[in-house]
Length: 80
Image (cartoon, rainbow, N blue to C red; front, side, top):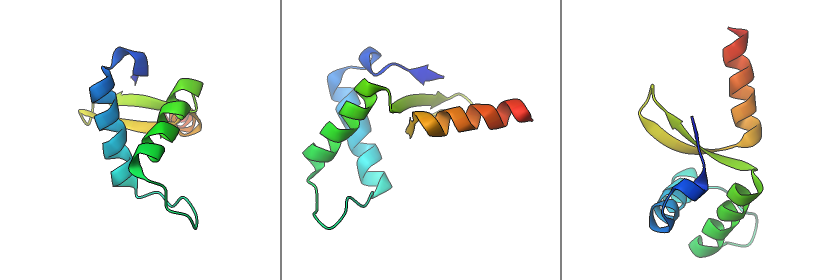
C-alpha cells in the first residue's frame, strides 16, 4: 500500500527518511554529503513522485522505494 508523504507528520517523515538514508548507506560519489542534504534530496524525490512510501501488511513494515522498483514488483506479482 502506498502512503502519501503528505499524510505523515513532518517529524515522522524526517525520521523515516533519516532512517532510510542511514540504513541504505548510499554512495553519493567522491564528495561526502551531509545527512540534512541527503534528507532534502529524498524529500524532493518524494514530492516529484520518483520515490514512494510503501507499507507492507505482510511484513508489517514501511519502506521508501523508487517508483520504478514499485512498478516492477507489481508487475512480478501479477505475473505469478
